[in-house]
Image (cartoon, rainbow, N blue to C red; front, side):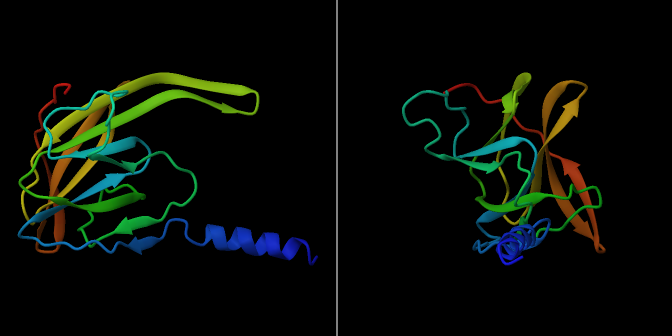
Length: 178
């Protein structure tokens, strides 16, 4: 029993954070910044102040980018900064402060191969990218949406009126390769 207790305690503590809200400590200035929420499940990257997508494999690739979401089974804690939540929001997400009035390039990637024991799973790789310019003091969401079998990026702006949260699709450009 004494040998099992530390294992049970460790497992309990590791699971305690699942599906909880963790406030982020990001400084947000509505005059200069915007906020954006991304949902878990699809590998999502942000590239700041660029209108072209860096080519993978080049020296310096991703120097101005950051992975903001990726598929995960553990640590499902949401990182929140006080954004309004629409009724159709997914359960797991992270929220970020980004500079306003500068291009924000968002990439989504799915697919590839993984192995579980002796079984190898392989799905077609899909990649999509879009760029838009967030406006100061506004809230956005960016997420993957499956259009039949094709991956699609959705960007929408959130609005609050009379305590109700609504959303509006935001157009974005398809970026060329750098």
